[in-house]
Image (cartoon, rainbow, N blue to C red; front, side, top):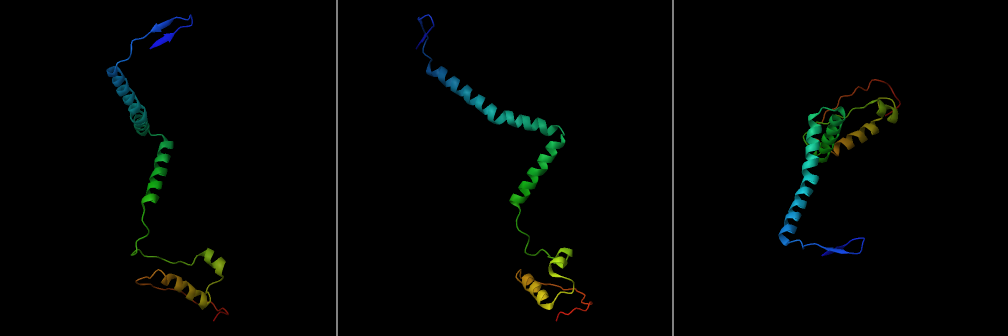
Length: 130
């Protein structure tokens, strides 16, 4: 191999041996390992030792993500409470609801195939609903 200088002359370099190339290749791989694995791990470890509020917030977000990603649907044996709330009253009207609406509610609950269900209600107010 030769290198030309600006003056027009050329300088001859000794060829790089295969052994030297192998050492340079190994050193390059080691440097790549340090840059891609050890350095970021060291930075994360150092930051985790400090108690910065932003890191706690990031940790909680990551934890929430993993919980959502790995969570399973609700257990088939878990109790389910159906509550008639203010939003339902605004949407479907004053209580007591018409019997056909209560029947629709029971049909929707029945789709979940409950083992047992209980019903408590107070139908005291007079309405024009049959």
